[in-house]
Amino acid sequence: MAQSKIHITPDNMPGWLASTGFLFPRNELELARFEKLYPIEEEDIDDFEVDCNAILNRTLKIAKSITLEREAKDEDIVPLRMVARKGNSLPKHILDKIKKNQDGRTKDDSGDPEEGAE
Image (cartoon, rainbow, N blue to C red; front, side, top):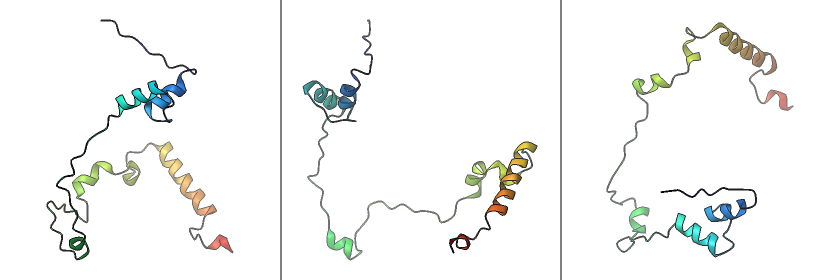
């Protein structure tokens, strides 16, 4: 089975942009392509209702609650730490660059954003 290849050229680029939704479709072909890519989805909202009084009175019964932890666990953070935090396995040229950046910042910027605004 041979597949047909569709080549996008500068001449047909606006048509493909319109067919994919980046521009508005201008003709029936672009509209048909767009509708094939993004079919209309029917939503079932027959049993959907909002109890505004329960929301405002804070008496709404939530079917599913999610608990969030205030602090992350150490075992989750360890792989995300930056190498520069420990500094013992960094090459010398990286350490020199870090020191140079920190020295430049302390000379140029005192750290007080209000000081230069006078």
